[in-house]
Image (tube, rainbow over all chains, first blue to last red; front, side):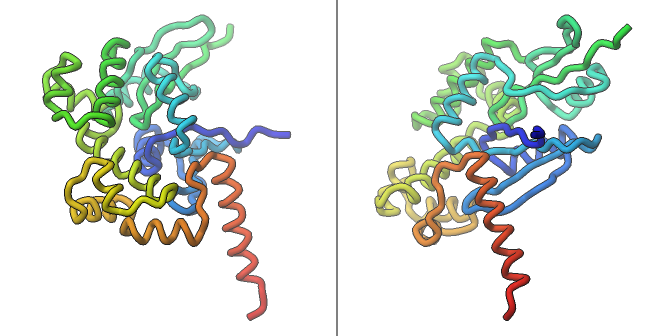
Length: 130
Length: 140
């Protein structure tokens, strides 16, 4: 059994695709029309099988959960980066709004930003091992 | 850096945009921000201006009602805050690529799931793909 799919709720699939590809740098992987929505996934240009589904939050339960996390300042998910200081500067330059600048947190350095689609996202860089 | 108390103020404003007809200026004032600062910060966090957000929210509420209820289009138009059915229809068509009536007809015909979820979308996508593949291989 493998984990090759995860998902994130978004308030608008096109807005999400624009942000996750144009700003974060993911690559669109699958796009299949399904009625009013799309089966829409992105994947990392750095390789790996795992895809991220940009899932509409049209289900009231999904929206309630997503908005509660957001209002409480809790990131929906986290992505690993190789150089968080550079990524922080790059994303800030592109207009991304952070709620936490790079901060050491034990074995990682973390930062948190808004993905413009109703979520806070955490990025983290593992500390180099001795 | 966006402080947590400002994030919560933006969430309060977002709720007001959904439930109130107050002006953008009034909503900004209600959360203790200038109109300019509110619009700029809202757009940076939510990816659209407060006005754009309100229009999109109303359009999606209308879409749900068209799919899930038998209310007529004019009543739905009024329910989501439009006074002009013509203006509502134009905004709706621009947003979804079809008129309100056409969307309802399509939903009725296709039986679309009004509450999409990752796995239901995935399963529907697989069904679509397999039907396409089958039609390519079927004779005639």
